Image 1: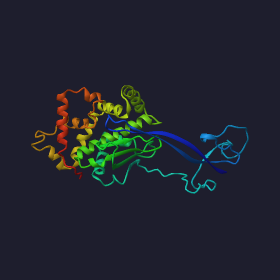
Image 2 (image 1 turned 135 degrees about the horizontal axis):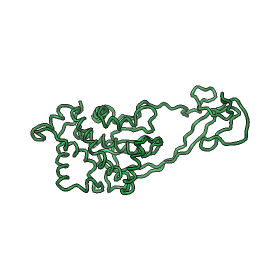
Image 3 (image 1 turned 90 degrees about the vertical axis):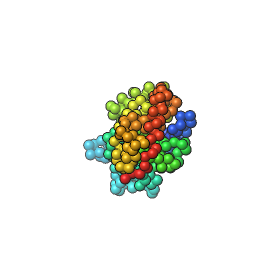
Image 4 (image 1 turned 45 degrees about the vertical axis):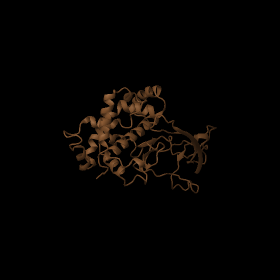
Length: 315
């Protein structure tokens, strides 16, 4: 029995979109060499390029208990013949939860809001696509500078071997808790669209989404426009439902501010949450927004302005 290292080169493109549709996204090509190991019986044929065994002449051996001489056996970390080279990882540890909090995100108000969102129907399903063993993609949540300094946040698709990175603009974290919740939902939807488009194990729902989304890629150029148009058509009502459910959990003072006489003396209307869902989608290249009348746009902006007066606490 021996342990054979082999390598695979993987190249992928990374798109760094901007929330501002007038700005072109940045592109980056990255290539990495992934080294892995397999254990093979002494009579087996070593692996060829790409990690696949090279087909060749016959032979016999007893490496496989079923009598298949060329059976490859995945390396186990404690197999005496499969000790990794110094500095190499043989069997990496994967966390159970694959939504990773960067230290910049941990124990912040945004972190508190995110934890509350995880209990809300609608957002809970979004997060579940990235949590637990066996999920394809990780998501990293962080707070820092965004490529567009006026953006509330950004989601980066960095390629199939990198986590989807969501960065919340550190300059925008003093907004009301409900506005921050809206941004978290918005960026997680971007992450879900990237996941569904790039998964190698699509569900029936993913396949249906891809078929629908093809219409958007034909009509709109770039991730920003295609994502935002899809969100405007399919996610505004769902975002509004999530925002309405999370609002009471953001502290009584937050809800009470919106129930005061200067805001909504008869109670917070559903239109308030629908309007807030449009924040981040109000671009000239978003068909759903462009087709609204001036009166409709003014009403949406009226509600969005009210959201700014909520407290920025999360209890």
